[in-house]
Every structure is written in structure tokens, then in C-alpha cells.
Amino acid sequence: LSLKPDSAGATNGMGTALAAMGRYTEAITYFKRSTELNPKLAEPRVNLALAYLVTGQTSSSLTEYGHALQLQHDSAQVYPHVGLVIAQPDHARRMLDRMASHAQDVPDDPWPRVWQAWIYATHPATSIRNGPLAVQLATQAIDMTNHPPAAMYDTLAAAYAQLGDYAQAMTFSDKAKQ
Image (cartoon, rainbow, N blue to C red; front, side, top):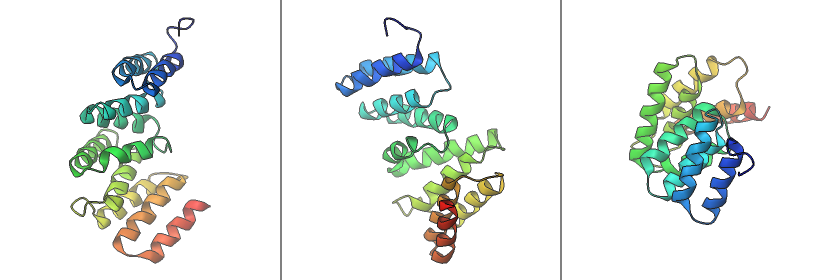
């Protein structure tokens, strides 16, 4: 870091080292700096979100995960982390609201619909799950995309499974594997 103080990667690395030592408050400073140095990198945002989550700053964590999702929609790195936050119904509702707002602001972006569909299809709380809406949103996202990635088909498969239509769920699960 002393050799490259303006390197987003080195700054993120320092934050990661501090977090590994349990020094999350200090790590947050470095992760924030990394996002300022290169706002287009998703990794420092995920690290910042996780540090916020560990320090009890759930709202800030959700915001950073939202930024990371906008940067890297189908990231295997982001999915499990977001799951930690949205497992609680009020956090899921906030994420759904955030994604719905983003879908209105950027109507050509299919990913907010994918994320909403995934939450509606798979959330552990029955008060959140909504199979018909999940199918509708996932279908819209796929229809908006020339070559839908596997994550979109997986989401539609989960939505159909939520409805109990296992034949359709298997059809789209198989399509995701192709």
C-alpha cells in the first residue's frame, strides 16, 4: 500500500487484512477508500457490505450489497452474502423496494427483476414469498435478454417450484445447465 497508495486493489487488500484480524472498523475505512478510488469494482463493495454487517450496520450493508449487485449482477461472490442480509423479512422488503426502484430508474436492466424474483421465490418467510410474481419478474428478465445467463433460468426454475409446477421448474433448471 505504501508503494501504491492510490491503488484500489492494494487498499482493498489492506482492508481485507484488517478484517481478517477482526479489526472491522478500520477495515471499513480502507474498503470505503477503495470504492472511491475505483467505483466500478464490486469486490471492495462486497467487503465493505460484509464489514458493515459484522459491525451491526445492516442498513449500510444493504446499500453496499445493492451497489455490488448493480456492478456485478450475476456474481457468485455476491449471492451468498446478500442471503445473509435478506434472510430477515424487513431487510428483504427493503431490498425488494430498492430493486423495484432501480428497475424503474433503469428499465432496460433485467437484473433487478431477477433479484426480486429470486427473493419472492425462495425467501424463508411465507409473508415474502409470491410465486406468481416471481414467475412474472423472471420471465420479464429473460425476455429482456438476448442470451440469458444460467442465473436467470435458475431463478425462473425456483419461481415455478414455488408455485408447485415442478415440471416447468425442471425444464428451466435443465435450460440453465445448457
